[in-house]
Image 1 (cartoon, helix red, strand yellow):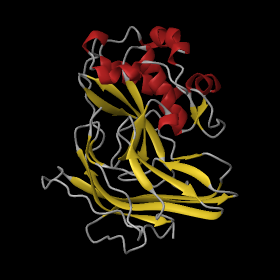
Image 2 (image 1 turned 90 degrees about the vertical axis):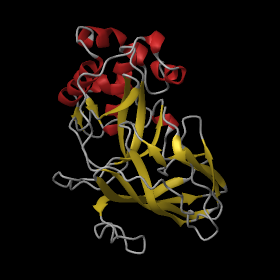
Image 3 (image 1 turned 180 degrees about the vertical axis):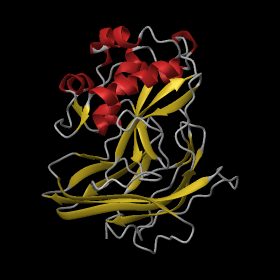
Length: 314
């Protein structure tokens, strides 16, 4: 996986994450995205909590840098400290106190305005040529039961020549064959979603990863923000989005079986073997999520964090 360009230090007592120095080399044809979230929990007793919610300055799957122009925490930031997990993701760790606990993040990111690249000539690498760090992404994991879809994967996609062509065929099959809609749960596996033919973005990503791994293509689950740029805005309230990346010809490449078309403005938060590695919140107790707001919109250089994000949200 690509190492992040830099990690962000812990929030200060004021709740503002310190600015991070960035390289001065510009992103080609950049677009700025204002993104963030606010979560409210009812907490009955002191409860340890983890959050995987903060995008970093990094090289993303296309080789294009993701720059964080400015950012701040919202709500109860004083007790948070951060660490980097085994997948390179920044994790917030805190002890939520009894009562109403609200936490959020607001940022301005810069990414490329180019849509997700389409590279049909990319090859599938033989397993013996794969870098050591990609091998874990060939194996079954908690929600990616790739061993259970192996026979179907080879029957459907084994005759297709070329790595990109195989992964795109997987995305086409899932997009055409599974209806988008709620019905799955937080414990639904790729095989269960495939059998039900009904899925949300989390399930589409898990199914894509499962089929790729079954075909000996390293694949990982990715979550982040995806604004409605250069498309008709979706009237459904914004949420975190999930897609997947496949390792082809020495690079991680973006695929999104939920939408199955190139999109602009993805802001990557985290990647892992499946959703269990990148859950936006993990509670070690009975904290109940009572309210959630997510925003992600195109913005420009005149927008600052002093201005409320999206008038539809606040």
